[in-house]
Length: 209
Image (cartoon, rainbow, N blue to C red; front, side, top):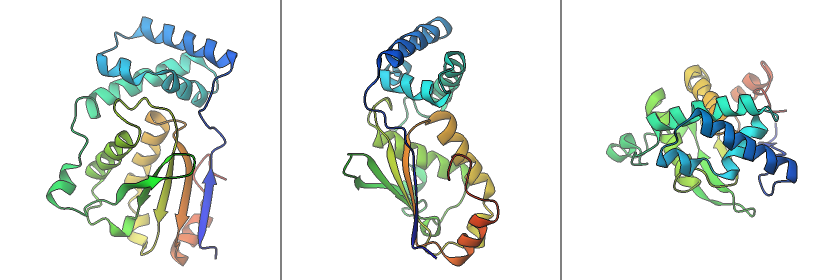
C-alpha cells in the first residue's frame, strides 16, 4: 500500500486572458444589479473571487452570480465581522486538528489536519474551526488569490472517523459552494488498511481521480 496519495487540481488562478476579464466584468455587473454589497462583501468580491466562481460554474455567468450571491449570504452569517479564532480550541486546545503549518514553493498555504488528533468530533464547531483557518490563510476579507494545500494525516484513523459522515458532507458542501477553486492539492499520508479498504469500495470523492 502506498504511503501517500496526492490529488491535484489543474486550475491555478494566476492571470486572466481577455475573455476571462470580460466575463468577470459581466459577472460583477450582474452581481451589482442583484445585490447591495456591504463593505465586507465588496472586499471579498475581488477579481480573483469572481474568476473562481466563474470557473467553478464552467463559464455560466447566471449560475456563477447565483452561487456567489449564496456565498455572500453564508459569509454574512458565518464569517463577516467575526473573530477568526475557534472558541472551542481556545477553551480546550487540541479539540480540532486543522491548522496552517507553512507555505509550499508556490507560496500556497499548507494546512495540516488529522482526524485522530482531534478530541472533539462535533460537526458544527469543527466546521467553524476549518472556516476560520481558511479565512486566515487567505488574508483579511477572504478575497485574495491562490489555492491551498491540504495534508490529511490518517495515522490512527479508525472506523469511527469514517462513520462521521455528516462532517464529511459538511466539508464537501462548504469547499464546493463557498471555496470553489481553492483546493490545489490534497495529500493523504499514513493511510491505514481500514482507510485503504473504505477508499476503494465507493471510490474517491467526486472530482478526484
